[in-house]
Amino acid sequence: MDVAEVLREHWDLKVSGLEVLTGGMNSATWLASCGADRVVLKAVGVDDESFGPGLEVARRLDDAGVTTGRPRASKRGRLVELVDGRQVAVLEYVDGAELVPSDQVEIGDVLGRVHSAAPLESGETADWLRFLLPFEDSLDLEPWIRPAVSAAIADAVALGPVSWAWLHGDPAAEAFRRQADGRVGLIDWGSAMRGPILYDVASAAMYVGRGVVPAYLARRPDLTEEVRDGLDVYLRVRYAVQAGYFAWRITTNLLTGISGPADNQKGLADARRSFGL
Image (tube, rainbow, N blue to C red; front, side, top):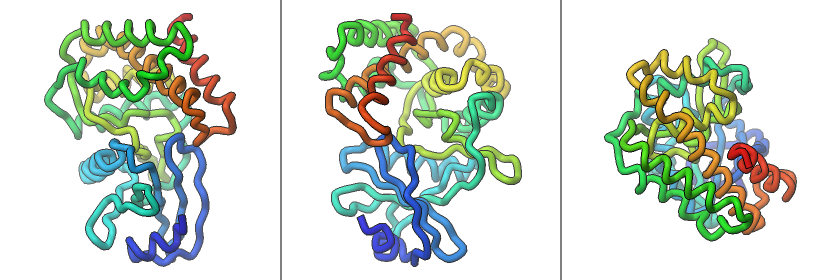
């Protein structure tokens, strides 16, 4: 992809410098200098159904005061343009240091702000869990995967109705940025979706530890009982997603965002260990 030409043609931006960014598991990204301005161009496959909705959520949250890497509309007023068989968006660059796992208080606090700014009516847990279906054909890669995933799904359904919001979907520490003024932003909304708040909280706890929970509940004390009763259940759901995702990557030999096949095997082994297997 000729990134400079895409930015000129679709966003009317003249590029003076370009840098490839690393770390995206399912996307390609570039940092472009356009005079004194810096933007990120992000490209994903045409079958990525979360990309457009994630951009809309990022824009809405940015309006509510959460720094998200706001998407810029193209010359035609679109957040997404189709270029060379890929979906492409341009985002405001969020400078600052990535958070680390010890920054649990800041991570929990920002997640609480996100969910407060983007609440939704609760939906059916069983219907929501259908987002695991793309991994269905890969769950027999190893004999433990399908039973573990099925048990996690059954436990979440049995828990009953829970609170919903727009979710980040993958709140690892590196998605959070501490800016020069001390504020913390949350970028990379490619996994955003509607769903149970507990899924985001469990995801953060999986990545950085349960220290996120008190900070989250300081923002959302109304959810104290719900988090107490449901966190472990949704941690198993999060492990199930990781198991299905890496099984799918292995069976399709998908190597984007990693150094080689061993990284996919490690992701699956980590999921198995999380289930105590």
